[in-house]
Image 1: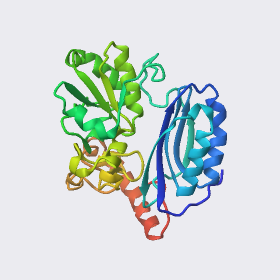
Image 2: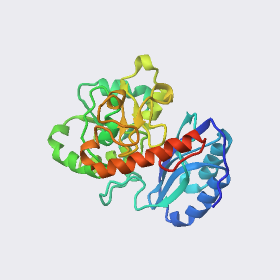
Image 3: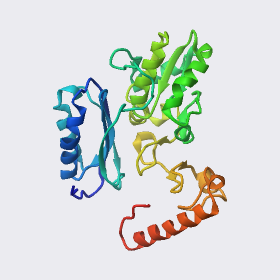
Image 4: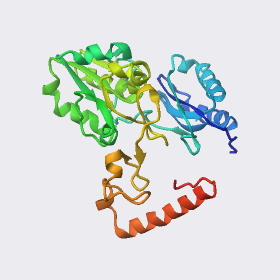
Length: 308
């Protein structure tokens, strides 16, 4: 399918909606055609439980897409966070069919039926300052490495599938506490709070709109956020005001890298970093080095390269 080209800067929309979506398979082709015809790129996931994704395009085309989605009855109340990117942060448009729009792997967890109490960004600081509140970062370890809220518990999970087991193992620590959870855009928290409530906990809260909404609305001088927020596109991270961050990706293992990581003797652009150097063979690094040469050659010629 041909995709029109859109010139930057780009409007980025992170969106999701939990809903009963029995006809999700039939929406795949119309959505893909709608986006590709307008030069929109990114990923949208469709499942029985709703829609999730992040896309980028011009202000006008993203506005058209959101209006189109909101015209679908099941997507009424769609949660959307907007930001900007100087360059297109995605390489193609994908609309995928999934079992879950955010994969936890636990049966009968239903955010539509029961979910934690939403807390607006402007009220978040008061909740997490309460000594009776335990603050939990529901994101993965590589995301937490770039930044988190002051005092947040890091479950050290490599995927969201591991989160339910962590909760089960720490149930005693959560008893008689207010449980406040957060994630990038709010979707993982909806499922995390639904799961925790299914275990019998009542005082369960989550940050409405996630870290992205907090960084957008809360002034940096009042912020309890430390570091940058990892995002799943070529910007890598954003900071206060949703400005593009300074983090970079290791093109060998896709781990986000801070300035300290980039200064490591194990870091070579496109070849290795401190997170993957000892897990890769010399043959792997030679292959990555050849790919990096092709990337740099394409850049000098003003062309994109699939490996960049």
